[in-house]
Amino acid sequence: MNTQRDPDSPRLFDNLNEVVSRLRESRESTHKVRHRGHIRELPSRNAMHEIVEMVSAVLFPTHYGRPDLHDANIDFYVGDTLSGALSSLAEQVRRALLFSADERDPRDGGLVDKAHDLTARFADALPDIRAVLVSDLYAAYQGDPAATSISEVLLCYPGCVAIIHHRIANALYRLGVPLLPRLIADIAHSSTGIDIHPAATIGNSFFIDHGTGVVIGETAIIGRGVRLYQAVTLGAKRFPVEADGALTKGVPRHPIVEDDVVIYAGATVLGRITIGKGSTIGGNVWLTHDVPPGSNVSQAQMTSTTGM
View (tube, rainbow, N blue to C red):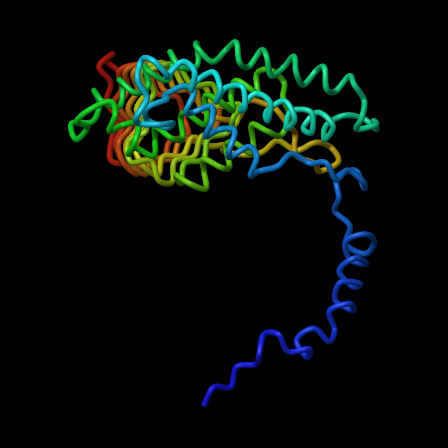
């Protein structure tokens, strides 16, 4: 016997007005969490997801855009897609500036002008961002014997998706755009399982193999030609605290990884320590001290080609 109620039954909506009223009271009074108490024009996560997809298509049109593009129409496609991406991005930048500004009228033309300027500067950086990403792609192709082509890396490797998001987010972060870089980083985290703070400094030819569970903190500095495997953490050992008990913001607290370092799966590297150039950190190592160049660190021992 079917005991389900008719979804159109009036009984289903008997207390609808009461629930809506109580939700309003919670939203506007008892449990109010709106930014600065009144701002509704927040940046949109969905809009940023679409913008990153469009920018990715601009950078790699046949891989993330349309696979049927050819020489006669590819520039038109890139121009049209970029135009749409920049228009949407400018609005999201305006909202982000409003989010971080002092009390201000959202119709203030100064925010619009600044948003357009920042968006134009971001557009100017796209060729350089693509050049760095190509170095990352070659690092993945050359560093993984299972990779059969650059196209396979672009289409199938979550580490590639995460680093594309990071290069875009980091460019916006360095321009001083608030909030949006964190949204982009979290979008990548949600889809790849790789968590890279947009402020992290990462050199060319960076490769994350497999990638799930990788965490790279805000003040981490990574050199050229570095390779990480899944579940690697470049984190903070401790969090400095102010006199009032609040956490100190912005102090260097994450590792420095110099050029050509390899860190294998499950390694945890904590604090403002330096891993010297050309070192190898083995799987599941817990590391909280400096490592000289050329070292090989495993769970049982540490050796160095420099005679340590």
